Image (cartoon, rainbow, N blue to C red; front, side, top):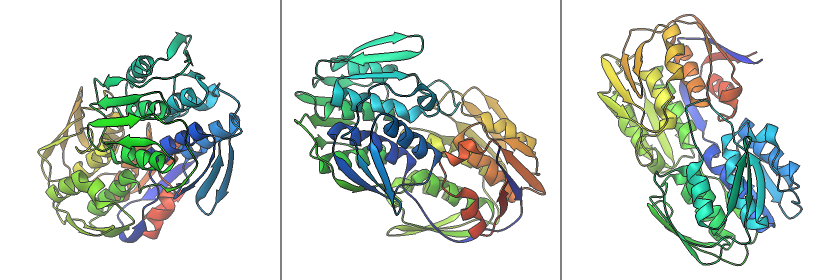
Length: 416
């Protein structure tokens, strides 16, 4: 088992280049299945989740060659519709292969997906929507068997703007007969990136980034070249690191528009944030201000994937902050670990009350999920003494070379 050893107290300074977005590359890799052609995908991050997705695709027959941080992926040889259970249970995002395989082969067998333990994330909206499009789905003993004689376009009203459901519908609809309209669609930048890839491949999709998406089905798709957008959550994590350590970090290769909600909340803490084209500079404040209310919401609201990192930041602020987690039911597991480091945090269902303290103290802590694990590393960067973060498998699912990048900024962190 690997773990991080962190000796806190160093001020982080320097520049960091942001890699491709985990939540964008996974659905785009799934989307390559629909065409059965060869695509060249650039700016691929080196992440555990990407390894799992490529292992799944290779298992069902795809040919993938890595070339200077890019993938040349040929999905023509795919000849299986049964996804390997042991891999699917490791990563929730594998569920988006349902729409892609239904579009390509009209059938898919898959177990219920796994991933971080951050509360119930039912796939009811995925199944309901695919059924509306003509899929027959049988559920038995934790497995799903989906069949169709041909998906058909229809009008779908999502009860909640689910990112995964929106992606599955898009993948199923691109070659369906007729037109599909998704209302109350997710608006995340990663949805726009998926649209851009598919449209390059010959799809006819309009409206991604708004709450109404219109997909006109086409006969077939081609392969194409596409560059993955930068990861806004990774960028946000380094921005919080600058604020917590009273440091100064310049982030390169970012899309500033994707980070506006994070920028606004950092400024509330007293951080100085300036932007210039594809760069952001964050200078941490001498005194970190508390935030009256921090509420997670679907994009363009404050991202749930940044809630844990901000809890770590607010734990050393002046005053009391209220965090309202509206997206997931059980996303405060990091609070218990932060309290091991001396933080004063009380949780009540989906609400956390964070009373800032002067200083965290080093402790042995356990990463229970991806973003919670990153929050513990951030806490360790400013804690008095030594922090050991165990179970960093989760962190490696979403951060490429995390400890190496932090070292380059001046952190005293090692992986053993």
